[in-house]
Length: 254
Image 1: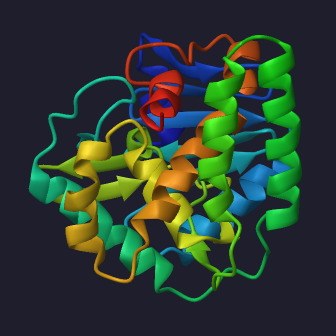
Image 2: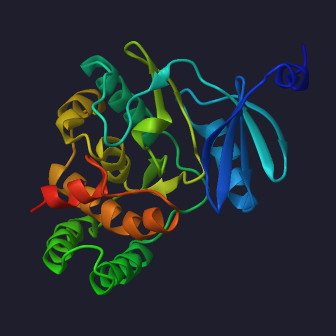
């Protein structure tokens, strides 16, 4: 049976995420990703082909739509909710991330530290002037975030390794999705994104990932990622003040 025939038999279309930049729909076992910026799809397709860890199968592409197959299992967790995944599953996720980071670099660069620093300055100013967060909270986290800005060798990073993007079945990683931010970058950014809001799972991830990790830099990335995310989340209808989410991550650094 063809993919189109399978999709025709499905009664329900699930909106996974939708905002002004892009949308993802689920139709049966197929995800349809709609994005006006085709460079993100270009990166996603090439990164999935290069990655040495399980990724979704690409079914077809007709700009602005990319169709990929669902991966088995369930997400490692959700930001703001306790993860029911086992310790072994979190360690397996760490091992998969190490395998990715040890792979050959993709040919395209990631964002420079100078560009990230400029974003941080702009977003911190907005957070204070808009009154979204107290000035002392922003200042403290900005100070913590400064540890990110140090020389480090680039690796093949996923770039947006949220726990909802890592799927497991029991203690096995079955797939990592959403590769549009993949590039050369800081390994600790991936580890921080994976454990954002789930700091209690960091030791389990590092048990699978292995040594050579500066935990203070991971904490710096927790602060930096949260500071950079707040305005985008608010403007796109998400709530960073929900329990366990970005505001709580920032308060934890106090």
